[in-house]
Image (cartoon, rainbow over the protein chains, first blue to last red):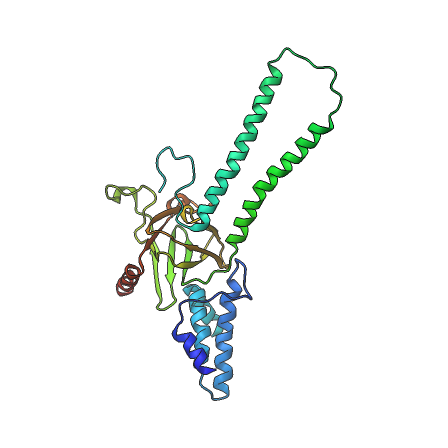
Length: 78
Length: 230
């Protein structure tokens, strides 16, 4: 399972089509991946496991979210 | 690029835009035929001395001029629906670019691998080199690899803007707080111009968009150069 994810991350080109967000408005897609990344990190680090699978969500939200939005999310996070 | 006295659309650089062009020709031809027919009938009616007092009703002609328009409408609707569904096809992009509208310039971000971002201001008229286009050239162009599906996510940082490139068949509103997705494939290399399409203040006419489609190796060289300069 981990190899599949590692493969996907290694061959990453850009955020693939996500069937949960099929329409023009991708705002939620960006935010959902940002949330999923942080939740994934929290859960896996909490259990003391390797959090490298969470890198997928990070790559996707970095592809989708504008850089100014990412800094805003981080500011509000803190 | 538009040429002087141009009446039709710009040359298409995207398969869906080509389809739209052909459909437009098809629908316009039907409209022109009908208009010519109606104009001819009106002129014929008005310019004759003959009168006919004895026609009361006629089933045949009534059937013909009900069925024929229905058939014509179906002939217009079928290609239209085909293109509509073609535009909605799921595409798997190779590259994601964010186009952020500001007052009064666009900024482009390529963040799939590294954090590459740059602003794109219009070249003022007095700084144009010979051969460049007035109000259309920018200092930095949005470079894309040709024949690759590209996803553009359009948004704005202040007021409403709209990112439009007619040759690529793209027009997408830039709304602050919202990320709108548009997709295209540049099927040929070239430089494609567009302009902001939503009124956004004093310099709304002076924030053009230039997309340059190049082979993949050139795109990779360009992005390395841009990252070094940044």
